[in-house]
Amino acid sequence: MTTLENYWLPFTSNRRFKKEPRLLVRAEGMYFWNAAGDRLLDGCSGLFCCALGHGRPEIGDAVARQYAQLDYGPAFQYSHPGAFELANRLAAIAPGDLNHFFFVNSGSESVDTAMKIALLYHRSRGEGQRQRFVSRERGYHGVNFGGVSLAGLVKNRTDFGPGLPGVVHMRHTWLPENRFVAGQPERGADRADDLQRLVDLYGGETIAACFVEPIAGSTGILVPPRGYLERLREICDRYGILLVFDEVITGFGRTGRAFAADTFGVLPDVLTMAKALTNGALPMGAVAVRDEIYDRIVSAPAEGEIELFHGYTYSAHPLACAAAIATQTIFRDEQIFERAAERAPYFLERVFALRDLPIVRDIRGFGLLAGIDLAPATRWGERGFAVLQRLFAAGLVVRMTGDTLILAPALVAEREHIDRICEIAREVLRAA
Ligand SMILES: Cc1ncc(COP(=O)(O)O)c(C=O)c1O
Image (cartoon, rainbow, N blue to C red; front, side, top):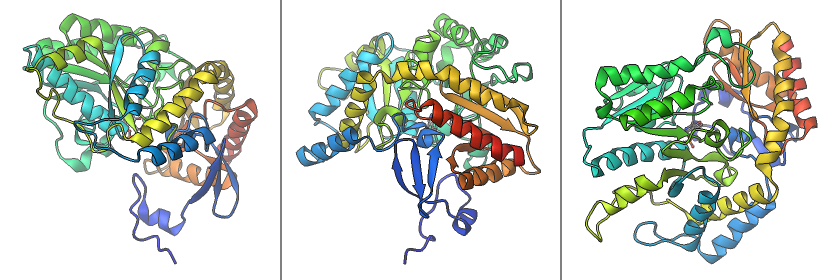
């Protein structure tokens, strides 16, 4: 008999979960099944990862073939063909000259890796004094110490000390006057001037990089006001600051193009990705950098010296590479990003129709991503958790962050799936 006591769940009330576990035992397409055999719609692509829905056989077959061919090889001083093939494939879809890819195992690792790359890039240009980072309130950049230091989420920071020194935060972009705006709000681009204020306070020449999610995902889908990202880009250019887009959620079609950088027409210097890279089938992340950054770092030391003292045992793991290549092939051959762009207006229309419910305080959305703020109960997150439980009982799996319900269906969702997600949400929210 398996006891529930030995496993410690992440970002979960363990005591509460173990009293009333929500176990998923099977998945296929747009659905999960629970232990009782009930079918549940997946309203959030797992955790934003399963862009193609669950269980695509091409991905499983590719992983099985790779396992039979080469299960693992050392990642340092050796490599394997799949790593290069995947980097080629990603370079073909990444915007601009983001042509070089460092592989990691998660979004959190991609962020901490990007921070190190930013520091090393400046050192190799003789600007080692650039050691500060700028990020944003309500930002989420994973849970490692670098990412937590960048994070703008009080609960993720409070228990873990002061974090890295030298990280300063811009204000977030949520503004009350933009409530219930679908897509990019017209007002709020001036929030980017916070970066200028930090430059004026600390000196632009001390700042290594500015990290933002183009759409802040985990804190409730904060869509950038029109002109905001462009203004960040201008300020970064003016002061030699690297602009880093954390596209762990927005990457791979979520906004209707390969990356949000394409959708919003702003090219970052560094771009982090994970999640849908492998369709969630195996853990993997990557950091993409522009030619100038790679060339500068790689040409800096004497011939034969290691340029970047950083990497993971499982960087470019052969099985993860195989899953990622198979995923990217489906994205390309089935024009999945175009499908997402075509489906997005319908999704947003249906989600925004929930605004008449008294419990709904705000809705935001872009592409196949939406956040619905619920009127809080007495304690932060209590209402959200109650709604999550009721949605589960009614057959819908979602992501809840505090009292904000997040919907991010697979990019292959049909209209009927979107209809059903919104119907279940309406029934539950009406009664909540
Ligand atoms: C923008 C962003 N960065 C980083 C991460 C961390 O990714 P992981 O949970 O794979 O470490 C996430 C996870 O949701 C994310 O949304």
